[in-house]
Length: 273
Image 1 (cartoon, rainbow, N blue to C red):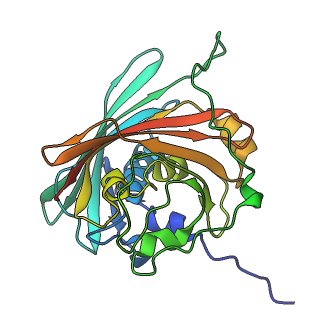
Image 2: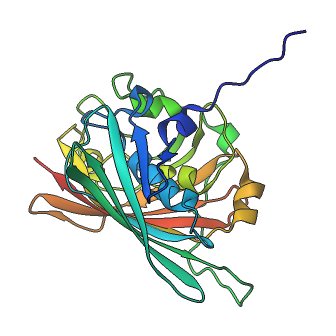
């Protein structure tokens, strides 16, 4: 019998990098993760994190990444420069730069660390929600390519594509996982931190131009927890604290299906009303 060859997951294709041996990686955007303008910001952040992870000098696990979207990324090839600027006893600090045709489009800093057993406590609590399998997957807009890679089951705050009434709350809570199913890892968790539609659209009840300027993800899960989570749905919730003067912020939490905190994230987002 002929051997069945499983094609690589679209996420792994989109974040694939080729190392040139001198701290630089070559990558390529893919149409599967296209957004309305350029690629989905979460896939860009995930690719930058992967560059540090795959670097031969990388030590420890990701603790945080901050990505600054300095300019649009065009469809096609790009280069990532990954530099470990300092390695300490417990942490390692990185600078990352994504360029196209010699022009910088995205910058990032990342911190990796050696996790060890210590006292721990989580002061925030996961939202009280129905189980994922009790909710129907949302029909997502076909004209945005990247959303086809995610199964989203909304508890509250689904974004209406057609004009709707303004909403008094900016909170969205949903169960989300990759489709086709893929075991969770740090790049995948990074991308999941950016699956929320812009909060301003939920508040206004209509589509407006908006784009992330800066995204920070803090990783609370270790590799063992990510392995246990595997491809189960992640509980994700996000809200804004303030809108005004063309920008708004967003805070988010991502929880394992057993109620363990996986990651928190913060964004600053541009919008035009």
